Length: 232
Image (cartoon, rainbow, N blue to C red; front, side, top):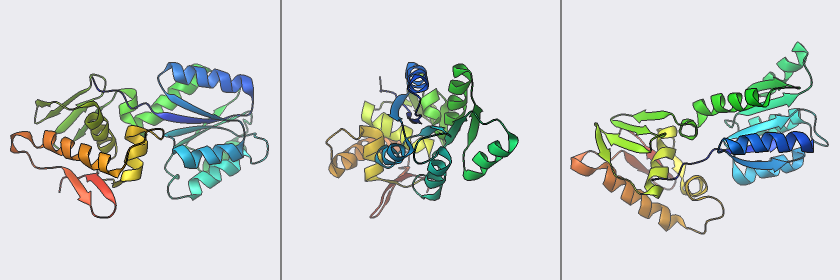
């Protein structure tokens, strides 16, 4: 069975008890969690791991949560990462300010951890649907991520674990061009010592599996950049 691609969540929170509580509950749901207790470290982690979602406290020492959010949404490669802000500020003007800065959701302290986890899952359902067990479709391809099954025109396809993770990445963002670097990060992880040749080999295996019975190849090579799942 192919291994699930766990969503990677960056939690930026300076209160140790809150950090422990949030991290424990997110990890219990199967998410990968990276912690930062201040804005500067949060921004460094942001560039290193490019998480799938950020849980961000408004009141941070040094660089404020609002400024962290502003910097994240200002940069092209990070602006689409969803941000859920945590704050004790409950006034409407403060909520509006947070949302105008680019936050995608807003949770006021004290909050229910179950509610926070539900909001995380709801956000990931839109941005990383495979991580919450959604069924993905593109053209004649269908992927049931809860059952780890892939079909094309209703016929089951046999994929190795790496090819499954590659296809999941493509089907979550069809027509997006993925560089080899980003595929290495998403599919193999930052701690794996693999090179571009490894990516190309597994792309070749995925194409072979998808083209069985004479189906057209849906994986497009973008010269000098990477690969994309495309109907053309």
